[in-house]
Length: 300
Image (cartoon, rainbow, N blue to C red; front, side, top):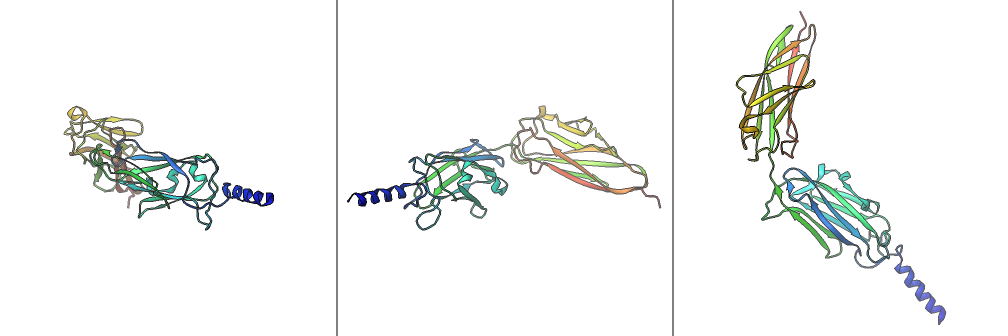
C-alpha cells in the first residue's frame, strides 16, 4: 500500500513540474497593457507595451500533451501598424520564450512559445508602431486587441490621434541643361504646402545644400522669407505672418542662382532641399526633394 501511494505522489509531482506537459489553455496572465503616447500623433510613431506573468510559481512547459506550443497569442493592431513592418521592432524579454512573426495582411503580430517558462516570470513586450489612420476623442480607434489562443482572455487599449502640421516640398530648377564654359544663370523654385489645416509650432526652415559651383540670392519678391547662410547650407526661414505658416496653404519661394560650369568637364549636378524638423510636424517622409542639372563645359 505504501509503495502504491509513493507512486501516486511521484506521478503528481512530475505532472506539476514546469518540464511536464499540461492540459488546458495557457496559464499566463497579461498585465500593464498600454499604448503610448496618448493621444498619438497622426502619421507619427508610438509604442504598444504589455507584460506576460506566470503567477502560480510552477512554470509553463514549452508544449502541451499533443506537442503544440503551450502558449500562443496575437496582437491585432488597428489604425496603427508595426513600425516599418519590421519584426525587429518587437523587443523585450518575451523574445527569450516566444518566436515572433508579423502578418502584414492581417496586421497582426503572432507569438508562439518556444521554450519552458520559469515560475513567477514577468516578461516585458514592446512593439514600436507607425500611426496609419486618425480617429477622434469621441471614437478612439487607434490601438490593439491582444488575444490568447484557446482562451477567452483578451486585453485591449485604444486612444485617438492629434493632428499636427503636415508639409511637403517640391523643388525645380531651370534650365536643367547647361552648355559651354563659365557662369550660367539658373532659377530655383521651391513649392511648400501644408495639408492638415494646422499651423506650425516652431520655425518653418528650408535647407538647401551648398556647393561651390552654385550660389543663390533671394528674389526681392520673397518678403515672407529670410535667407541665411552657413558653411554647408542655405537656410530659408519663414518670417511672414509673425512666423506662423498659414494652414492649408501652398507658397512658392524663388531664388536666382549662378552655376559655374567646370572647364572641360561634363556631368550631372543634383540640387536638394529639405524642410527641417522642429516645426511641429511628425511625418518627415515627404520633406525632401531634388532636381538635376546636366552640364557640359567641354570645348569642341
